[in-house]
Length: 350
Image (cartoon, rainbow, N blue to C red; front, side, top):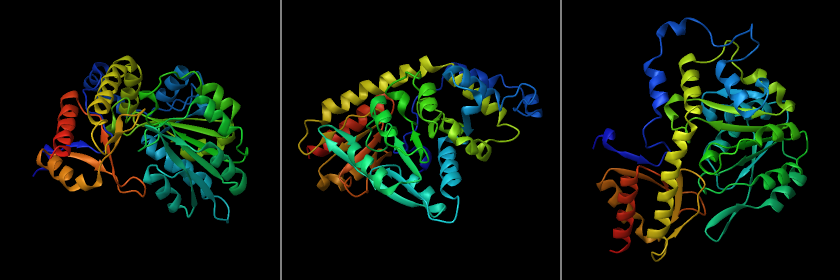
């Protein structure tokens, strides 16, 4: 079976067409533009894209970070602040979360401390009192929050974020991974006042999820003034890839287009809940991201794996402790989502 025929619903990638302006920007790009750097010392900006993001979000351009995807920014900030000094440094991360967080900390011999996420009804929640207790007792060097969180799909409200931040020592770096946040809420007005109020904060976003450009490898972040050392650590002295920057700007200008695709995904998340939520032994969780988490009877695992393999669809069978009877499925195109739902319904009825 050729990999080119597989439908990947396990990577949280984008399964729709790109915005017309993005396509037009690529088609009209002139190779002669590669002959100069993107950083402009005369204008005092790091790049055209970081300047555009700064204006869009109402933050100083010096507080905008660009990277090779949100992945790169996460790696760099952990490497920057957990590798300092001679003692082993500590980071708090969610118990159910992207395996990559712990992997990055391991690269610099950091100690990972897990804080709990618990199930309540049809969703998961952060255990805020326990996070505060760990902050007080462990005095970590870094706290990582993910909102929405992968794979559980739950988000923190702004009030909850401020509540947590108010209990954080000013010397502790706080990183919020907001890779999926635009699927849930598109208000960006809180960013500027939040990083001003909490200068030890870094908010990381990406073009890979909502803007559907994971192959572009482009991410951005907003940092408080206490993280100034990170700017020198992460910023490319001569700028970034000029084509990527232009495509990134085109994507940001196409936010309404991508909001339409997010609305389609939301409709199909509701369809998953409607069609699968009443099946015996199944539970479909609320999700603020472009994926949905489903609990299924573990005895159906092999049958489900075989049924998906027969139609070349790849979904994520979770293997983490506490989630081993769960599926994480990326929202595909509407026809694919209906095919996935039918497969699960038919398999459950056998």
